[in-house]
Image 1 (tube, one colour):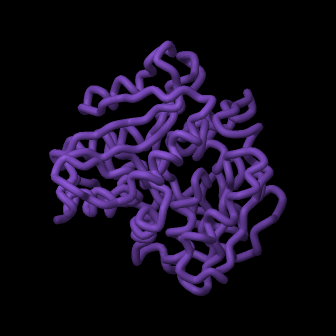
Image 2 (tube, helix red, strand yellow; image 1 turned 60 degrees about the vertical axis):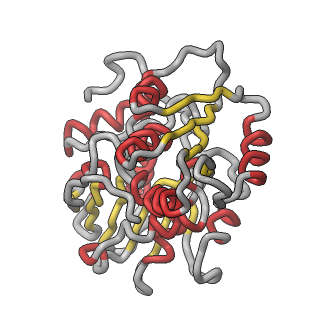
Length: 301
């Protein structure tokens, strides 16, 4: 049984302010797909949801931080498909419940606060002891954080459509690496795939991506110098860039992923990193939940 969600059409918009006389940049606007299940979240979740439904699982559980786009998206998709959801949160019960988590609760998600200290260990133990298998109709189907896994990558491979084939370069932000693996699996032979990791000193991400590839020898590049200090780390220069991009292009970005991605593209363009004649497709992976952590008025949108 297929997972259902009503989606708007995907558009590709020109990025005039990030193009030059020799390089043309455009953006795949996954953020326009759905007002809640924004960007790549639907693609990464779709086949997990279908497998959970096919196994008659009554509940789907996953993991995330206090501003997790993934948990909000899962909560909504589960509700739309008449399945319960549980979110294991990287925060303690004493912490303020963020607007993002309140939204997930509003869609029916049960929250379990795991703290920060042993989050990874607890998560890995839960995943190890709860594989994607169903024993009875009350079983819980577990999805790794961010939808990481071969099933998530399979869904992410469906992001690229027939209108994406003529681009020479595809560039995207990298969190868990699931989306980038899907893009690499789906790319045309002539296309270069570039990932911009948003975590600092992420030494394992290349291997984590390679483990999800159909062709283990497929080439891709990771540019590690654009994380702006690490995951969810910000600075005034990032805010200024995001506001300037909004003024010029009316494209909303977030402080965790797409703001840093577009800032990287701007820097690479100025460094003449891209070959003359390049046609670049930037993937807007959606998800603006992280912006909710900022003081009101920091961003213009």
